[in-house]
Image (cartoon, rainbow, N blue to C red; front, side):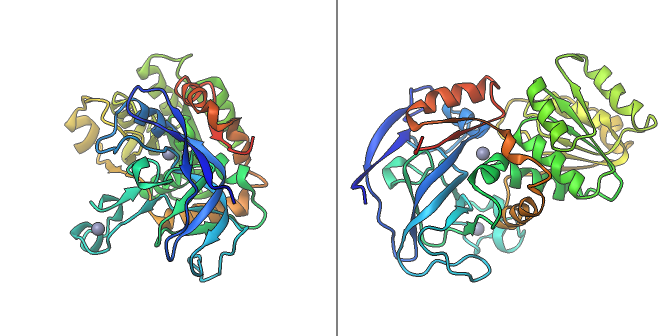
Length: 368
Ligand SMILES: [Zn+2]
Ligand SMILES: [Zn+2]
């Protein structure tokens, strides 16, 4: 076993990434060490590099959605079904850990994503605490981290093609309560929007319309099953985009609209796209990008609309989304969302390509 491993360190907002050597990790009792196969470069990592998230303990090793092979365990490691996970097994893991199960949010509200003790690999873990991010040759799994085997028939590319957007989009669709034969509009064609479109279809939507850009992402939306797409660069007028939705819904608007854009002005536009007594879910406003103006009378009260936020995801979403991927990956080409794979030393380029929307999804792979 190597006695030193390389990892990409984000030392602070706006600082160049550094490739550093760390002592090879050994698992704590109940924990494990993975040999990394692939780690996602996600929009969150772009936000991290701009310092847009609060409470990030720089320097960090980014990489919160990961796929690796078990290298070593300290004691038996099991999945949620009680199966033993042995060295060599291809796995992923729930990036959130430390959720306490004891606080008001955990116990009373049953809203684990709002637990103040919650920590996230690659986001709220400092490089000073070890290899707790996936942009590395190895990663350390703390005791209690929930490990999921990649289901038979899927490989690392399938899973990573879904990536962070897979459980996030799944959660948003669950929050939307999509009903059989609904018309669903997804605003945004990034990984979260694309996965929301997929799961809206799997949830029984009769029609899924995706409003986004650029063209390559809209083409991906079509391949993943979206019925129609609207390129916002071709139709820059929000009122015209609302008309486009209403023309396809007998003038009513969509039953469900899911916002996965991240720009505040998408919200009043989306509320115009939803029908009276419909549902609007906001999942894209992951960082504070500012305010938007809505009209409480027309957008909320008279529209009789249900508006829901969707923050992060819980283990249940991760687990169930992965089972659905295993069932449908032959038909739904998640793996094609991986546009480009980069070596660890090219992490800076991967981040720049992600920010510039030059790729749908970028992966870091230590072995290439
Ligand atoms: Zn808690
Ligand atoms: Zn992410």
